[in-house]
Image (cartoon, rainbow, N blue to C red):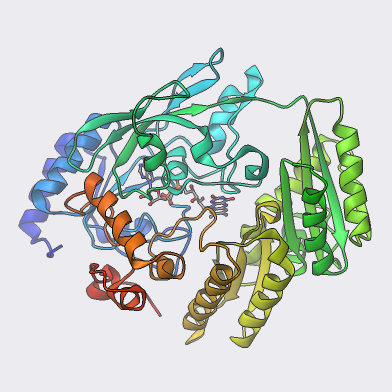
Length: 491
Ligand SMILES: Cc1cc2nc3c(=O)[nH]c(=O)nc-3n(C[C@H](O)[C@H](O)[C@H](O)COP(=O)(O)OP(=O)(O)OC[C@H]3O[C@@H](n4cnc5c(N)ncnc54)[C@H](O)[C@@H]3O)c2cc1C
């Protein structure tokens, strides 16, 4: 987008304020800085305006102004994304949904809730918890991330193994389309008629429109829950235990792995009871009917012991269970104890390849002179290598990015994928040809154009740049916006 003149910017600000009210628009550089990145701080880009609508009609009016002006716009939830998805990479309008954060309706008989997109994930479980219900998708960021952001990234979480990802819990959506029209995709019933457009929208990373209401399934809390900590002296033993548990036909609610570097950071930060000298620990949870839960636990303990666990113990009570989960869910934050910055990678591999891939990850990162901590959804084969670095050291960011690209290549080579849950965003757009052919990408591009014909809705995301497309085949894509604008990609 061409730079706005001061006069034009003032006129636009007045127009935006007329829609969302005074106090609903930010345009001063120091205010805009707050919105220049998400959880992946390697990428930064400044918007021209950040706006705070409180209704779908506001969002529609904002989108219409943006289209008239040829101004890019992007939805933003809590900004906890880890792929640069909500960055205004071509400037323009950031539409923050944080003031649209109400639970609009709860229907316990039909086990559904209608919520606004800015509702924080955990707040939905808090709202329905006293009635014995909860919302199952539980990203580790659930204390902060929004349901709108979860929809866009089709987020998962530790309990994805048994309960599935966000798309398995969404029935319908009210969406402001990129031209400002307000439509419903899906509805309140399980088997909506026609094309499954709600399914198509979930995971579209904010490039198909802006969700303004979401109908989600809520589940009854399980009768019983048991959480087991298994401690290993070798990471290979922990990896083998994951396969052994699944091979026994068990479907735990969660199987999470934490390596030594992460255990030590978590223990320094929170003292959660993980043994500091362990090479790896598994946090395994089973839930369901009270009858049978002990038997499941015993089979899990046995699988861990047979794989070489030196210690396996169940949380003695709810307080200890919560403490063990606190360690897992706060692990990313705990890296602050051992490094000034880190980059979270998100790849998927077949579970049986865990020992090989974890070994390769360590080699790749060490070859760049860096350190890596691993904490991830092992049951799903969803890896999260966290590459630690110091942005003040010249060249270190470039080495992080190089190691990250190599790790993604390995995931693709072993038959996995380049994102389990964080989305492609800006970060991994150039890696798409590791997985998709030029024809695959061109087809996806056509689908995007059907929803978003002008391309103004969250431009520059998901699809590769011209450079990497050359490697993939002769598909014409727009050049990488951040490179073009000379913004912020600081490596
Ligand atoms: C400590 C930490 C732990 C994490 N753990 C997990 C995890 O376990 N599992 C997981 O999946 N992710 C995890 N994440 C990543 C992140 O929290 C998720 O991707 C989350 O869904 C992002 O939500 P958000 O509200 O912060 O969205 P944002 O970061 O604000 O935006 C993410 C994307 O959603 C789009 N978007 C936002 N709102 C809307 C809307 N209403 N309509 C359309 N598009 C919209 C944006 O344009 C952007 O493309 C973690 C992140 C952190 C920092």
